[in-house]
Length: 630
Image 1 (cartoon, rainbow, N blue to C red):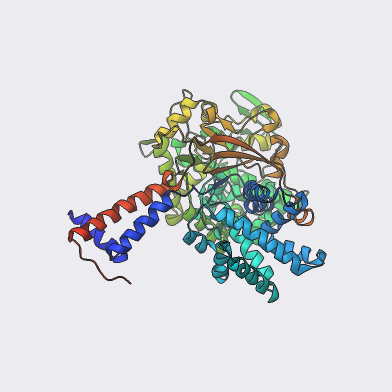
Image 2 (image 1 turned 135 degrees about the vertical axis):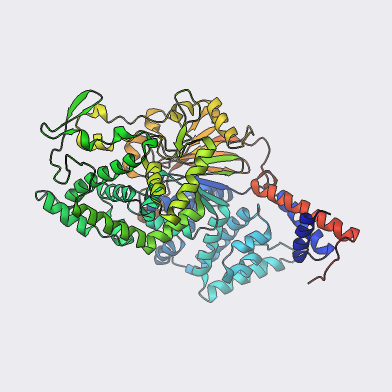
């Protein structure tokens, strides 16, 4: 027996000291392998739209409604099924409304508790009893376990026992709490794992509330988006990222998240901006001043890093101050704005003394915001640049390509990073930036936010042109060639192989770019090898996309893309039982039902079984002595 194997078996023997315990665990694990694969729920580009996100999280992209319809289509009306769905989504709030309307409340409790138990029974059927028990609220675990496993017998003793449990719950006025417990269990069993494929922050006002929800989630991973990395860079102390984050929130009128949620005051910036631009509204003046500061700070970063090859983004020093124009590619353009009181024409990227004070204060506020850093640490703990899960490759933006469709990247310290190695480098550097605060790492966080070859950005940003030049012909932001080549199955297979995925059943799951459904675009591309699930939650995109975007459901039967109409409000959901209208389309139907043994967790279980078999052999051969049965 090898030394390392012997150590492994000795450790395993501490948990399974006898032949009987080893045998039971092997039997248990083999049984688990043959249960159906759990449901995965993919969402992307939440952009601070808390209510829409919260509703889709609650309804599991329509999975719960499908189960309710399957169970009760022939016994409950549409209105009754809608009400029970809303009760599952928002149990506490919906109960308050129902109790004001129902005449015989005890009778209603009896009916609805029975219906909720039936739904929970259906959803629990694909899990072990142990896993379902762990998912239950501790205070009700024993009772719910009993109710889920009632068996009809000759004298209906079990059914009577079941009924008496419900009667007692109602009699002691515990029905509301029990309904909440059942609703929570149903939502937890409906989805086994949640994947957030980037961009929680910006545009919408409530990214902090979304993160508060996600922190409490039982099983999830996050693939960082460009807006997430911006806030991560800001919390790490990148001044260029801070200026961009502040500007975004001023631009979208979302300063509450800065000032109220994270305690980051804009007072000094606003007072200074009012003095510079006395005829403007305070917030408009603050936006104007932070934009100038942002272009200065970005210019400094680009100047420190010629390897970024972004000198064409340093435009302040190219302004013709006498004529109020700027020359781009040999053409002169008139500027919409010619008042730059803090820009020194001889040193355009130097911050004024007042600007230095403002950015230093903002930097300290971002670094020291306890709630922001709680959220950012969560993003680091649960997040990464990409994830490989159950044969699928998840990332937010792109894997940069050149004009020929080959992997492209960036040269750092004499080493070229491309493909998987580039994303690994970006992941490692992002983590180091938050820990060490080293200037070059912080600069790279900004590059990931908006760099030309960034795997999170994927386009050539034209913020200066869009801010100061009226001629829209210079606004076009060229996309990385990835967004042309990813339409071909050949390119998608090349990317999948780069990440070690060779199965014909593997897919790329991508966010970042809204699917313009109104213009005929489809989320499923490259013969089904790539799926774009930009959630389209952001209200400002709805006119462009024509819908409120897509989510993805993957279960034991295959993958389904879910298209969603705009969400009205939680109030409308509660008052009128209004759900998000969603359509479902199969991306891929599994040619066999997928079981746990076909998943990443199944591979781990198979490895565990092999180890247990070695331990069993060692016990039977006498090379390891058995311990005592507990």
